[in-house]
Amino acid sequence: MHYELYYWTGIQGRGEFVRLALEDAGAGYTDMARVHGDAVMQPYLQGKVEGLQPFAPPFLRTGRQVIAQVGAILDHLGPELGLVPDASSRRQQALQLQLTIADLVAEVHDTHHPIAMSAYYEDQKHEANARAASMRGERMPKFLGYFENVLKHNGGRHPLREHSYVDLSLFQLLSGLEYMFPRRMQALWSTLPHLRALKDRVETRPNIAAYLASERRLAFNTNGIFRHYPELDGEA
Image 1 (cartoon, one colour):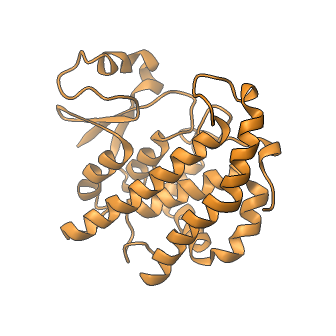
Image 2 (tube, one colour; image 1 turned 180 degrees about the vertical axis):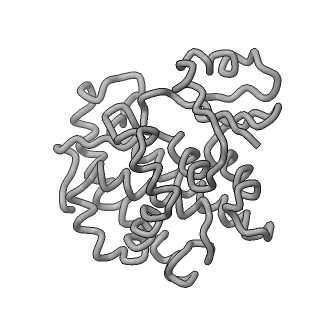
Image 3 (cartoon, rainbow, N blue to C red; image 1 turned 30 degrees about the vertical axis):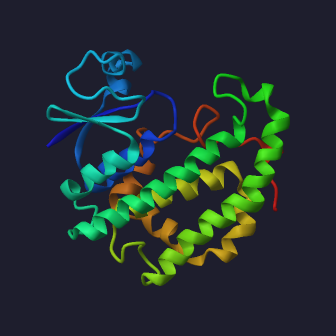
């Protein structure tokens, strides 16, 4: 099976959650916009391609099927790539955790764009500062504490007791938060021993380590979801 992944070029965003699953499994895929440019996505986004029109990237083409939304993509890929337990109940648990990760990712984005996506960060810095304080003080501890407890209650190594795409998505989430809020994450790590160990383990998985060292892995930057603005960071 060969997959086509569609996501914006130069942006380290939601598409990375899908890339990590494909890379970890050693799956054959083409990053279509990187090869052909962002315009290759327009027929899909304009509803000119057979199938349900995606609202926005990332989306995946597999055969004649087009799947959008990270949670839906990973739910589809999980069984094909061996990245989710076989039982339907465990697959549902994986999707539940992935959607919870997506909730936090949405809040992360709204931290630096709390008023409007169409406005520049510089036009909403005051509001972003207030939102960042809430993110650091309330939302990060709540979400990350939840995932820490899930790990603890399932043996400490994997959220689903075995390696899955959820491990990979938590790695991406933690890496992004560490880039975005280095001071806050440094203060939080001591309360998140299982999550920290999971991040370290995923980083050393052979296919992931090779991917992270390659040109295919974009560095975090101020065009993506996880953006580092020093004025938004703090130890608390």
